[in-house]
Amino acid sequence: GFVSTWYDQSGNANDATQVTTTSQPKIVDAGSLIEDSNGNPWIDFQNVAGGSIGLDLDSNIRETNGASSIFASIKFDEVFTGGTEYQNPIFLYGTQRWLVGSTTGPIDYKDICVSDAGGVTADFRYVRFSSALTNHNLLSSIYDGSSTTGGGKPDIQFDENAVAQVGTDGSIDFGVPSTGNNSIGYRVDTSNQGCNVKFQELIIYDSDQSANRVGIETNINDAYNIYA
Image (cartoon, rainbow, N blue to C red; front, side, top):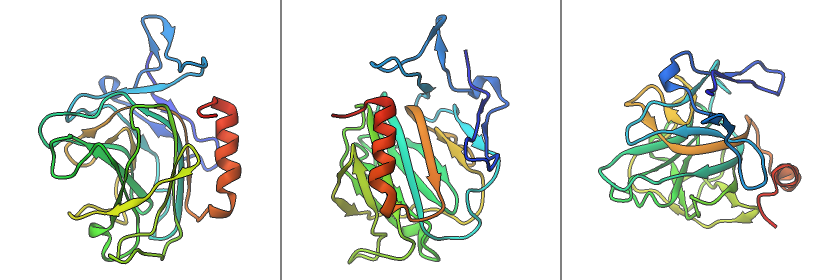
């Protein structure tokens, strides 16, 4: 059983869709719903290196650069171990990009890298965070639209299971252009940079949700029982 449409619940009709059947993520395997240890369903993006399984958003989350907040119930099945493949679990123009990849690539992709939509220097704006990627995690990243670290990188608040992680400024160029195709599970517009990842819930704001972070994380954890 495969997912052709992941419906937007916000009322903005920004559904995530995939019309190519061979690129659709899976939700049923061998007649059984794909579930976590608590019996909650997953959407499973079973990409191999350079894969093309993913969903495309029907429109941009935002048209300009600025603040953004992303919350995800997520689990990485594999971090690719050969070559220099990029994995893009989330690629949202004008909002944020999350990237992991080969453990032998130019960055230590055992970490997760988050870039913002901060303006003209966006191509050089990302921060790395250490994370237990292959665990079932609630990950959240919040950018207020203006704050930077000493290196000029975005000052992103990144949580793993409601615990703040310390970021390291990135050293090579990748960022978030202001327009283009938005996608989940892969980067659709360049090289089909697929990710071997599962999603249960993905909440995206074009605003700074720092004041509501604890409540949002608690709500998601209450639903999925991700951490104690």
